[in-house]
Amino acid sequence: MAACRNIAEQRLAPATRQRGVGLLVILIIAGVLGVVFVTTVIGGAPSDAQRDNATQVALARAKEALISYAVTYMNDHPDDVPGYLPCPDLGTPSSVREGAAAGTCGAAYTGPALGDNSMGRLPWYTLGIEPLRDGYGECLWYAVSSTYKNSPEPAILNWDSIGRFRIMGGPNGTTVLVGATTADLVVAVIVAPGPAFGSQVRAIDATDAPSCGGNYTASNYLDTGPGSVNNAAPAASGQADFIQGARTNTFNDRLVYITVQDIWNAVVRRTDLQTQFQTMTQQVAFCIARYSSIGAFNYRSLPWAVSQPQAGYTLATNYDDTDNTRFGRAPYDVDRSNNVSGFANDTLLASTAAGGRCATWSAREDKWWKHWKDHFFYGLSSRFEVVDAPPQSCGASCLRVNSSGQYAGVVLFAGRANAGQNRITDAQKGDPANYLEGGNADGDSNYFSTGGSTFNDVVYCINPSSSPSPPVPGAVPTTTPPPSPKFWVHQC
Image (cartoon, rainbow, N blue to C red; front, side, top):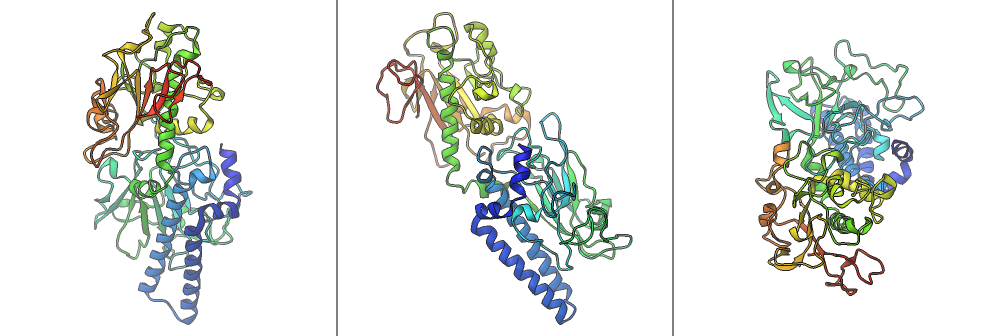
């Protein structure tokens, strides 16, 4: 995967085309900014206000370009998800051109391991823009959280993923300006270095930057502010602090930051995003519905769900089915159910190429499930549990949706968190009410596919009809061609 990213990121024209008009506008404005700056210098020394204005424009354009990269990431990487930010330009190896994002930047975030945040120069070439300069002609610096960098990618990335950076300020550098809570930590920071101070040396060295000039030693550009907060050396792992303060004779950094909301408020404007969530929910339901079709026995049974709460929600190994559990997360592995049914191959929700047992599951589904797995819930009727002789028909105890129908199971995708829903800690993630709306969080026999103005759950039904005709328009049979499917899957 990393090799594919490196190739894609070193080809400016395709990346620029795919990011479209938005980045073209950024490029034009950045070019105008450079002309204005040069003209101002030739015409006379620019004022502090003019320099500050040029700096703010450059920072704003860098922020736009990074958000655009996150929004369009799935365009450039068709099997991947949106939301990623690039690694910084680290200046190594020398074979990689200036302005290109590093192919990899530190250890990965796995959940148990926090991974490495990364600091370097803004990767303007990868972003498809020219070098952006502050009001003093210096190119910008950039730091990205371990939870959002694209290489090595985190174990999970979705709209609930937190950032790692806190913005400090105040006369003593102890006032938290942004990031007072874990949910408010920012995803990335862009810094304009301003002119050199004291012992800062910005001469070209072995890792030179011919377009931007200077070198890749952060301490030669970024300053230590009040409270000894050093913008050149943020913590490599976990939470890291940056300082935003007034200009002094020892501090002149200017910065902007990117929040979780900045990324995802832009991503959710994609018209294809909701369609992708519906497709994924259908695929999860279809693979669960095909559980009994793959085994050695010819009866209709469905696997157990994953119990709540769990020890964690980041790794695939956290999503093993649990004995006698009829409501919880959708199961990645079904070893407990297999112990009863005698079916082989414990891995259910993965492509056959990845060792899974669902033939309709592709590399794209592998990646989307990896990053959104905590959003999929599954309810199972007691009539279709994994037992020696499950019934061939439904009954009064089967599941209903909107108080009607008879279903063997339902699969739900939880939308973006509404007010009062918190999904940061494992304890919060273990409460379905922080994901699902209304009665869907109860795990009883009646689910809902509609609700009030804030309702955003996607619900798919596993219908035990064995008729060769679809029970509802758009239903998908678990056997193709159907003559007698065990289940149909359709949106409720």
